[in-house]
Image 1: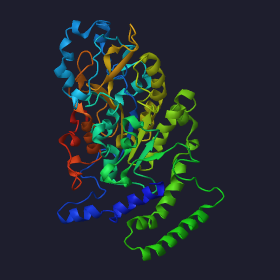
Image 2: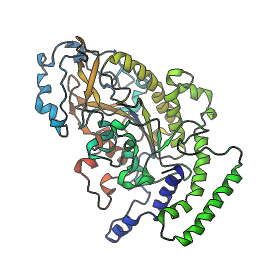
Image 3: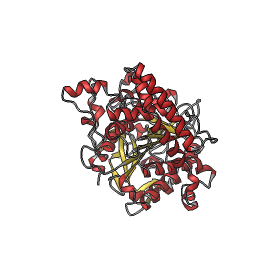
Image 4: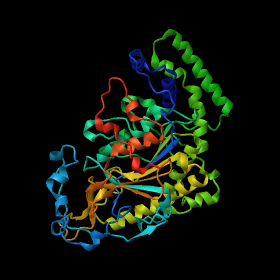
Length: 483
């Protein structure tokens, strides 16, 4: 579906034109969302930052001193040997017999130092000093876990379902479905950056599935001349009035066709799309024109440095989008066409030190900038990855000393800021080696439930007739993380 069709589908759904299934359900007492929060919200918008491939929680926001104390020893030789028992390893995995993966027991020490930041004194890796400087605005949820030990967990992170279960609505789609738009000139759900590769969910990681394509994330580029990769840029030889006349002519032709084909819903959709599409095609280039930002703001995000420019542009664009009323902005980092850049099976030092430089300053700048503009309290920023990395060093190619860490779904971290979460707070914990989520344990749909709650939505009241959901789909609000 092109951008014009997407624009229209959203409008049709809100106006009731494309709600055939819902109309029948209404007669049975079900009512679709009306675009209003179900209770007073804490946040108006969400910026959801996803690092593709699996960030090491141990070398980011959950450093463990015991990894240095027992470095190069087997976990079996430590007081914590029971953490690698088969029962504990398989406890959370869905279909564990199909997810057999070697458990690397030789403990790898922390590959970078860490220190305490801010008044809260939360430990942060030296690879993330800028984010560390903003730690007093953040909640670090250290007790996350997931059900997949391979990169299908990227889809799980966004939908709560295992990749073999197929497509299900993502958290951004639920926000769009529940609340609609604050700005008719822009989509309610925008995607910046390349999403996961085909192996790991692809477009499903920003899709709406049975909620309908009107709630899919709309992919955009930070390029005012060509912000929508699947839409022809505006013809620069035409004035805005001439383009408006073209849209009007097309609309008239389709209305004439509509007289002959009155039951063609697709045609009805096309008829109503042009004005909204025109509005979006003029609004989107404006929001992506970062040259309008003050040089100090551009430098704050790192746009003056090669290593931070690309992701800095995405973070700055995200701020501009929520500033203009976009409900949900999903920002991807680390696309490689396969598992993702953060997937550090080898040489984690080279891998993570480079990637951390790319994201650290822009993310910290985003939080700082939102706060300076008075937007942080109403904007929930979420930073995370599909899973963490193993405490043990991974041995590949028959190497004697492993230099990387393997996938780790049993315990990892997610960082949140703004939108009504606690400031300078640690929520939950992993065990002494960072292996299992041990306190305030949360499956990824608990994160979804928390996001929806802060937006004034209850996932249990966002049911869709005929779509049975699993109990784990709903999640539980991470109340201990909320202010």
